[in-house]
Image 1 (spheres, rainbow, N blue to C red):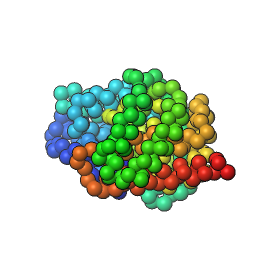
Image 2: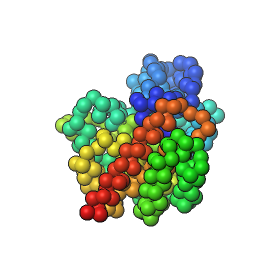
Image 3: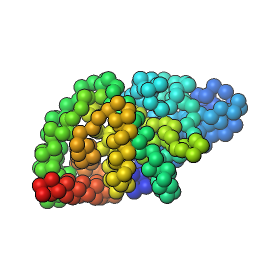
Image 4: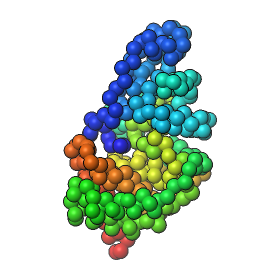
Length: 311
């Protein structure tokens, strides 16, 4: 589930009760302070400062061993390639990873605080980072056809159709069918699987902003390079034309290239996750409402784009 937590406020897993003594045992020394970190909706994270004045993030994986092992493997693979958390200790029995604390604020918070200039300046570095990620080797196969077929079933005769309403379900299905060739663009690569503004840590150095870290890789997977781009641009109203142009420039500077209409194709690819969420047996109405709003906006944007092409 990768919806905006400021919209949904829905936690996936309950917080794990972790004592100060348990944190000290994992760190392996005395600690001066320990505080829970807000923002995540899945795992339990603490910011810990040690007696030697070092600061660490301590993550307990509520999602179980699969998430723990996925993040451990991914951070190891991407070390020195992307600005990802640096692992300093792993507790395989307790499913805990300790990493060096990354200073900064989330891209989400930077935008919410109204720093338009800082936010806009990060579009190009974001493009470069995703171009580098697109060059990674896939860890497993990715079959878009089966994912699309499952979405079509949900839109034709599933809970997703009921929650969207037939007109909107049929409209997004038509857009997906028309876009199938473009959604399969690019070589299969490693994908973050949960990329949003809240997973990007940024900080100001001198007069410019930079990406200090891309975090939360526990749901990393294999997919098209467009998958993470669609997730990043899911809330399309947050990015103007200049932001998109700067992102594309950064992507090229990172050694990648994007197809014409990449923003449209990537958001359609991302909508497959929204459709899957809409088809779940149980869930919060606010989540389903958010999904409907996002899909309706996407369909409208696609229809307007097609209309301009036909003129």
